[in-house]
Structure formats: C-alpha cells, structure tokens
Length: 245
Image 1 (spheres, helix red, strand yellow):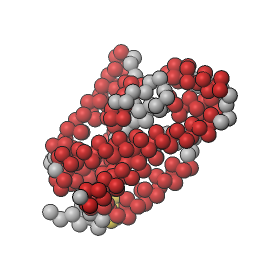
Image 2: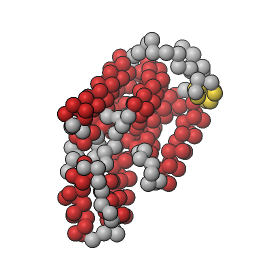
Image 3: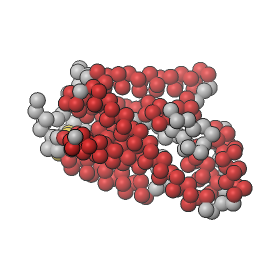
Image 4: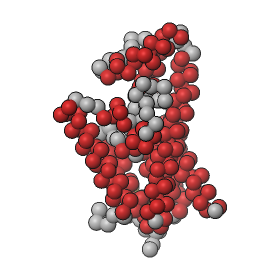
C-alpha cells in the first residue's frame, strides 16, 4: 500500500470500526433532532459533556459527548475526517487497537478541556462573592435552558463555563490526525481536493492554530480548542507508549 499519495476517493470502502462509528454518530445526530422537534427534549443537556460541578454532569458524558454534534456542518466535517484518516489507521492497527486509540484520545480530550475550564472558572470566581457563585451553581442551568443568562458579566461567563456542554468527535478526530501525521509524515493530504501538503506539516500547522485559538480565548468562539489539543496530546503519548512496548 502506497501511503505517500493519500487522496480521498470516495465512501466505497469502510473498515469495520470506522463504519460503526459513522453509523452511531449519524444515529445520535438524528435522535437529537427528533427528540428536540417531537418531544422538546434536548439530548445535548444529558449526553453532552458538562463541567463536573454542573447539576447536569454525569460520568458517562466523557464518552457520550463524542457522539453528539452541534449541527450538520459540525458532524459532516468530523465524520469526513474520521473516514479520511481512520480507515488507513484501522487497516494498519486493526479494529481493537484503533478503537482503543479513538476512545482514549476522545476521553483524553475531555479531560484536558475539563482541566482548562477548571482554571478559567477559578479566575472568574475570584471576581464574585460566595453568594453569587452559589446562585450560579444553584439556578444557572435552568436559566440557560430558557435561553437567558445573567446581566452580571462575570456571573454570565461563569454560568456558560459550568453549564454549556462540550460536544463532538473533534478531540478523537484530532487524535487520528496526529496519528496519521506521525505514522505517515510524508503522505500527501489534498486540501480542498487540490492543494497538496505533507501530513507532518498539516498536523503542525493545525496544532499551532488550535493552540493560538485556545490561548486567545475569544468570547465569540465556541470551539473547544483545548479539547482538540487534548486529543493530539493523548494520541502522541499513546503512540509513543505502543512503540516503546
């Protein structure tokens, strides 16, 4: 198999784990739309990853959040990347190791995102009294669920960090991207199906962009950049561990 020329050619061939992950993500996406439109139930509130102190947090969300997506564009690009990089990696590693890697990087991404959120919450809570902080933890989720938030800027920011769920397979997908770049550094990835770039440079550039965006912490940016980096970090150390052993 020639890994030096890597260009997506279609959805004709799917490896077992990639195929089932695509199906599961699709089913979760359809269920989210159906429950919202038919029963007025927001599945993201239950299956998206909430901060550990949120009343909506449950441990299983470290896994379930990977199958939830915020829109058609979100799920399309994640699933396209899953197929694009995941198929080759599963062929090399086999289904068991590939699934292990996917889950570890996805959960690792959640842990990094949770850790970064913890430090950000500490800085915001330093600007509020204990009474106001308790108010946010007690009633903030219900306020957001009604489409509102606090007029106090610090309380509103704290409420968003505690009760806004993280969703998407992006952390695991970035882990796959990192793995592909490490294993096939000189393979060509065709941006927009036309512009060739070596996988190692693509990974480095994308990682640098995510790091900058995460540090910038633009209030208008609702992308979990540190979750993406978390998937890459856990993927890096897992691959190094496998190689050493």
